[in-house]
Image (cartoon, rainbow, N blue to C red):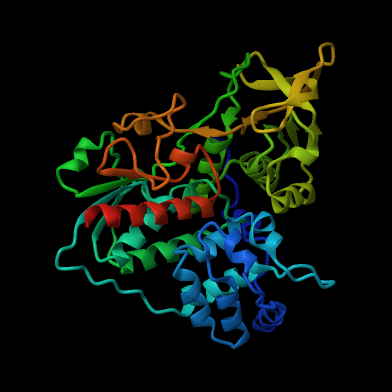
Length: 443
């Protein structure tokens, strides 16, 4: 993405968090709508089982620090999860409130309490046990951070290894700032450091034998570092990039306060229907693209992207092409992508996940003029994950049991590298589960 610079001030404004935080009065009003129902189905729907009625009742009472502490008991990344969790499909969907205002906006209340705690809270000090064990955590994404924090709470000595310059994994380098401000990520990582967790940055662990002799147990939370590439003619042309590389470059540019790619007047095509594709399309629009096309081979209703992402994409003018798929990219005489040839699809039958299967409709090809083509169809484990030494599936995901144990009794894993790609809150849940298993194993 080299090219002309993009005004940093304009970039900061364009990528500023979109949703305004609750005021204190709005938070208390919203909290008062919670009926603290018997059985708390919202808690059961939460992957980490946050005591939702408990923290909401503290907001009602004006005990904001208490609300934050209640959330932290189950979720070490409350502000992050409040912004990224698909709450509409989890806790909010399970809310029993049925008045005209709809269910309680639980994620907004969690964000309010978490942000207050991050700004005003005291550090959580964790004393090491006299018989403390040494645990190495590979990867500082949500799963690694969650596991590290829980093990520090148990009194163990924890070191997190991260290949990048800054910790946070996907939270820092993949999720755009308008969805997850980086000061929220930095603040919580500082909090975890205050718990006694150490971080070794710019350190790539290529095989776990590097750690086995020094640590009593290891947690692998390396995420999905490589893009899934579209295998179509023209993929080697300049201007054809993966969605994850596109977003990482934007985040690095903002973090390092350097020039962003200026897409003013450019035509950008994005392929995919998940949050990765939606983030790429929205970012392209925020960087000044004249036109952003988003191609998805299924129908609009079947797009897996979060409702908020779809709403933002519409607001910034993304043009949706559903039931359409790319066939080949065409370049100009200088080797730059200039056109994308697509074809219409139709849905027939279902796949193993129950989704409708897209089938191409021959004779329906059409061309779209483009200057950039962003393939945002998914991610997969990098070579490092497959070389760590544990049993993996053919696609490279690490095989674990229900307690996060791998084929090596000293190694545990969780997050996207074992699930193949899920949510931030599920990665946090995986880290907590593995930490509990590691604590049991060590004793």
